[in-house]
Image: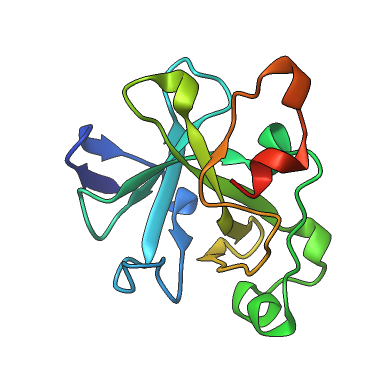
Amino acid sequence: MKVKTTRFGEIEVPDESLITFPEGVVGFKDAHGFVIFDCGDQGIFKWLQSTDIPELAFVICEAPLIVPQYQVIIGPKEQDILELQKTEDAAVCLILVIPEDPQETTANLLGPIVMNSESRLGMQLVLVNPEYSTRYKIFQPAENEGGAENAGA
């Protein structure tokens, strides 16, 4: 499958790499098809690229790699949408914002991306948790590593 993007031009991806978001993502309800691919040599970061909207792409990372204690409750409705048999089988990723100074990169803990790799279905959850923030700094000073004080910033 060929995917048109504004950042990378036209890219070729295997058809089986398509992930369907039946409800779209927050702010983009018409964006149903996405693919994930590596973000250059940066290891843990990936691109979540829309196949419907060429300019829509997010940098994502698996949540446990950034916030090991991060927990998401996936309700019965969401489990049905994702065709998820067990919630622990879900892949949970965070959308990152990388500003001009990469040391100020933040993760959105209140809007995780949840995917079922078996069914190739995904969705963005909207969490209500006062301990989490939309601007969690992923590069912590040594004394704050893993601290809750950053999560509510």
